[in-house]
Image (cartoon, rainbow, N blue to C red; front, side, top):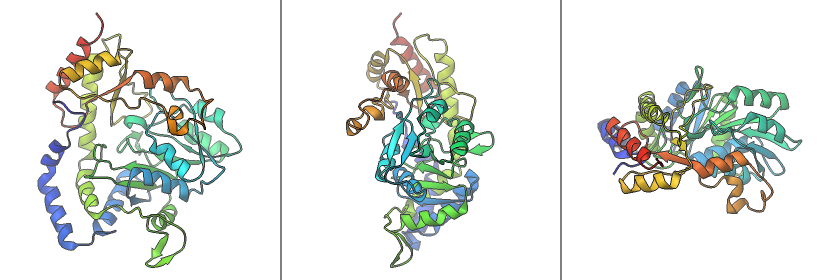
Amino acid sequence: MIPMVNLKEQYLALREAIDSALLEALECTQFILGPNVQALEQEAADYLGVAATVAVASGTDALHLALRAAGIGPGDEVITTPFTFIATAEAIHYCGAKAIFVDIDPMSFNIDPAAIEAAITPATRAILPVHLFGQPANMPAIMALADQYQLQLIEDCAQSFGATIGQQQSGSFGSAGCFSFFPSKNLGGFGDGGLISCRDAALAEPLRILRNHGSRERYHHEIIGYNSRLDELQAVVLREKLRHIEAFNAGRRRVATRYTTAFAALSEITPPVEDGIGRHVYHQYTLLTPHRDAITRALQAADIASAIYYPIPLHRQRVFAELYADVSLPVAERVAAECLSLPIYPELADSDVDRIIEVVASALPR
């Protein structure tokens, strides 16, 4: 079986260092907001090139708390993409605001800056771009819009740890960047976890209060907050993996290059396009094809995993049926109907990549 991601191989490669650090943390017994959480926050800030980071319990919480700290609330509109995981929109609606979905670029699958500008109204308070599948959104254009219309800019970096535009990391363009440490992510833990990057250190303090029951001093509560603290043991794992993130991302790019080189010769497949704006780190390798079902069946028969990210754009999800009944976003709808993601992880062998390519090609009409 060739899986979508093989977490065991990565663990075995790092097991000695991870196990040793976990045992040390267990001996210390500071399990909530302990020294490893604090160290991870500093090391992540240094890597991302931001003033501070705040570790939280999940990527969804990172989005929610960042929006709360930005003052997003009832009656506000936040412009975002419909082609992403539902957490992006959930976080907006948790705040009592409304997600305004606009269409995507057909090549990068990221939010279309021209569509953003067309959707801005007097109720618009923020733009929430997603660096989908590890490819940075067009941040220069989006930042220009945020500045022109005086809007908050918060980045959804759940899939883009290590992606860059020039020398600048994703998560360092907006006032906040929101990362997920779900196990399959480029930087993944051994459970849920998240991080908020702060371009300005002043943002970190209200975020720390929000994540810890609205408290900066024990049993003194200033606001209604949340219980969203990254586990100390997750921080141990993430600190060790952070040391290897560049190698992990290079491995993903190696696999992606091998796929794309082969698929460029197949007219029935459109491989993912690197749009030249930034460095793609390939959280997913997602192609387009009108023969998705046939390819999926062939891969399954060959004991090779595949996945569809995402089969239903958010404006067509049942939970949003009443809110967006009249919304039509044709590019996102077409991409959702033709997208297919193939296995990709740093440890995937070239021979397995070649086997996947062979099966995909054999499923196409001749």
